[in-house]
Length: 476
Image (cartoon, rainbow, N blue to C red; front, side, top):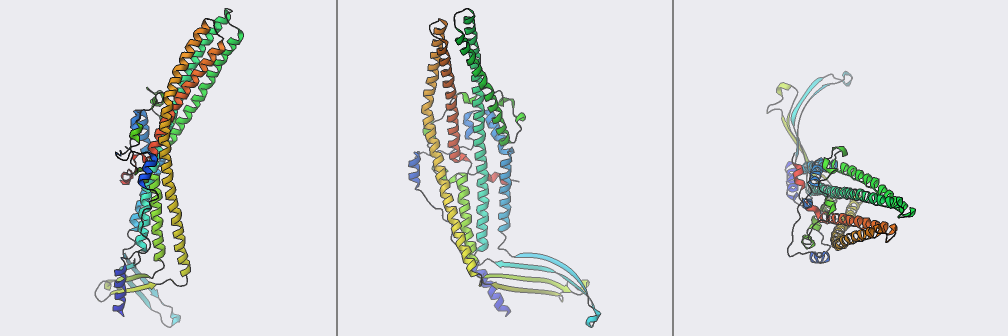
């Protein structure tokens, strides 16, 4: 009988290489060549993206903010610990298929009741090792390891995604901050200019050379300029607060350069080569952190089907003990008190078979959910990259028109003001020309900001070069 039990265990060991359930195969929703064509990418000479793509803006304050945020931001630190927890769960899961050994020692004293017919004092000592082994015949534990490994990789991709979103948001808020600072500077310059014009009109009014209406219009233009200034100041403080949340730095602890920049990158349009940007390899779509998260979730769910299928088959386990047992401590460890035992166990699902088969069906349906979630993530990635490229192209076309409009409106204002000083036109025409110039200058600054925002959107859509940055976070 003992030999038969051993044969059962050995047979189970031989079968332990079997893994039931479907193996993962990446679904190919869209042809790579068609994707490249739809995005109008140059696949002949692909060019990878640097993880420090924002350095091209040549703004050291921005670079320092991003660097600080990547090491200090609460969202990044939270994602790092989530990744490390997933690693330890994976390490733990990889040992499930191995036998478990526990050393135990114990003492028991028993004094029986005299009413039972006898009164005996008995000592009992035991020292040995317990062993238990659930033989992974059908691969349930191996599928669980696949789930944990995919969860671990998804946590790594999540860290990259947190970094990517964080960098994009910091740069976006920083550009909005700089844009509002430039608009504040423009509003202050406009106020000073309108004050000079008001002084001119006031002198003319005092000398009887113009009417009261012109004086009131000049005063109105000064007042409207004053109203703009606190609006921009409030926006500046709001963006500083937003940067504080993103970087983990209190607003008052920002470097002085935040408030008084030597140069303002928002004052000029960003320089970029659209044809060079279109050299991004199409692989960035599937290697984007958010897309990788979706795929790893799909991989984990695929393995979960195998776990559910394995539960339909017999479960084989082995428990055993080896050690010493004696009535006296001094006699515990010797050849006469040694003992061992083993007990193979086979369990076959029977009355709850229908429950287990439905569990398999449920896991398969859940996989389909993750499959379409993965498809949606790819479609969103394609949309974002396409929208960013189109946006850059269109905003670039508008930039030349905006610059020409500013120059034209400035020429009109100078000509109109000269005519007014010579008494040839009413002041209302000066006011209109000045307002048109301010609007043109504001629109140009808005165009600069739009160009920057589209560049940020492009690099974010292209994955930001962060697809393999997370392994460094595992260094203790």
